[in-house]
Structures are given as C-alpha cells and as structure tokens.
Amino acid sequence: MSSANVRVPAKINLCLGVGPVRDDGYHPLATVYQAVDLHDEVRAAVRDDDRITVTVHTDLDARSEIAVVPEDDDNLAVKAARLLRERTGVSAGADLAIRKVIPVAGGMAGGSADAAAALVACNDAWGTGLSRAELEELAAQLGSDVPFLLHGGNAIGGGRGETVSPVLARGSYHWVFAMADHGLSTKAVFAEFDRINAGAQVPDPVVPDALLSALRAGDAVALGQALSNDLTEAALSLRPELADTLAIGIEAGALGAILSGSGPTALFLASDEQNSLDIAFALSSAASCADVVQSRGPVAGARLI
Ligand code: C5P
Image (cartoon, rainbow, N blue to C red; front, side):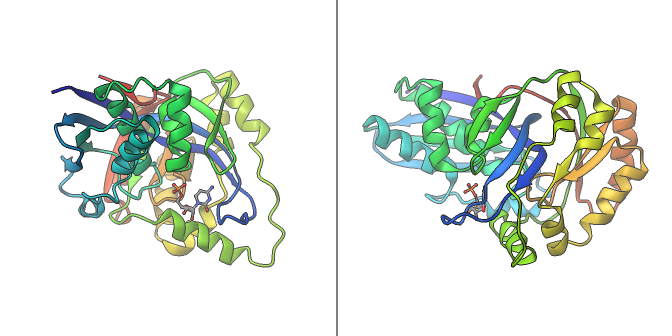
C-alpha cells in the first residue's frame, strides 16, 4: 500500500497587526510569518476502504495539554484529507499518523501545520497530483495559517492570515521558545482583543517598515527592536504571568521578546548560540515556563521526506 511522510514546521509571527473585527467574525491581519525549526511529521498510508483515521504520538509526555489533540474527525489533519478527497473525487481512505512536537494551542500553528502536512502527504499517497497553488487554495479553507505552512521561509500574511506573499529577507536567526503548561485558545484571545477594544477606533493593520528593513538587511539587533504583536494585551489579560516570562528573557540579554501569535508561547530573539543558551538557561527555572526550546529560522514549509 502506498504511503507518504511529510515534515512540517511551526510558524512564528515577527509582527502581528490586528484590525477591527470583520462581519464574518475574523480580524484583518498584517503579519510577517517565519517558519522555524520545530517540526511535526505526518504519515499518510492509503487504506483499502474509505475511512480516514488519525493517531497522534508525542515524545513530550511532560506536556499535559497534548491530550487535547482530537483523534477523530475534529482533527484538522482529517479535515484536510477529507477536503482533498472532495476536491479530487478520489475514493480511497487513509490512516494518518501524526508525530507531534509543535506545542498544542501554543500560538505556533500546530494544528494548522498538521493540516498542511496532511494535504501534502495525501496528495502524494493518493497520487492526486494537485499543484502547490491548488493545495494552497484548499489550505486557505482549512485555517488562516495553513497556506503559510505549505509555503515556509518568510512571508507577509494578509487577509485573515491566509494570503501569503513573498518578503525580501536575509539571515538565519536564533530563537528561544518558552512554552507554557496550558494552551490558549486563539478564538478566546481574539475575543478578548474585541472586549478590550470595544468602542475604540481600531486602525487597519500594517507591517512596520522598520521590521521589513531589518529583515532585508539581515540585522538581528534591528529585528529584535521591531518585533511586535497587537494580541499582547489580550493574551496577557488572560495569562498575566506571561509578562514575567517575557521579562526574564529580556533580562537574560534577548534582542527582543514577544508572544507567538495568540500565545501563550513566548519567543526570544538571541544574538548567537551562546546568548540563546543563556536565555534558555534563565527561562528553564522560571515558574511561568513549562519547557524551553532553542530553534532556528527560517526553514522550508511542508515537504515530503
Ligand atoms: O483560521 P483559524 O480557524 O485558525 O482561526 C481560529 C479562530 O481564531 C477563528 O475562529 C477566529 O475566532 C479567530 N481568528 C480571527 N481572525 C483571524 C484569524 C483567526 O478572529 N485573522
């Protein structure tokens, strides 16, 4: 029986501009995505019958929130396989096996990553042969971050996050991620953003020029200063202890610190390997931080292995 394995990265948002809520409940975003070296793997094996099943494995037993990854039709990877099947008219089923490393509900697009990987894996295992552009169209229907996880590298995200366009960027960056022991719901953080801004005139979001020129120059110091996230106040309102996590990383010499997407993962830009180690060490004893990971970015999007 045919099968395919795909490796897919997590994403971070170097900036996350959030506009006023739209009629469809989503918020317009102006963001710069970067794919980082923290990967899930998804294997799709063709079945004789038309069932689509999913199992989720993790090495990270210490992280209790892994239990919330659904192993049924609510799993976004299953939805991705079903959507591809509807689009192509293929009749086969698939067993999906997810090896999970990206934190669940961590603001790093873990669920979206698995959906992107499932599209690529099933497209190969079923031999449906959709192009990358065709897969991106399906990806946008599955979630705001899914098209970027096919794309990888660095990219500007517009619309509700689903429109991805290239950005001129150089350099490879050292990141430290501080994971919290409980996830945050993206939906809840956007709802808190609306509550905080009720009655206020929320401007249309823009990508800061300072961030674009830092990326063009490959200047980590300037990038550290230009990191921004409009969901910070909302996420800190739901999880005040994250302010301590951010402060600890800055004190340890990080070039910049922000929450990743809707949080609760905090990310820190390090100047080099030694600085990255220093930040990771300082965070590892912080009560507000359950796990620390050193990483690099940018890396490629969802790829067959
Ligand atoms: O697109 P996705 O399903 O990943 O989004 C999860 C939730 O986050 C949405 O249901 C919505 O409440 C919120 N969201 C938003 N505006 C965006 C992206 C997500 O309000 N641009």
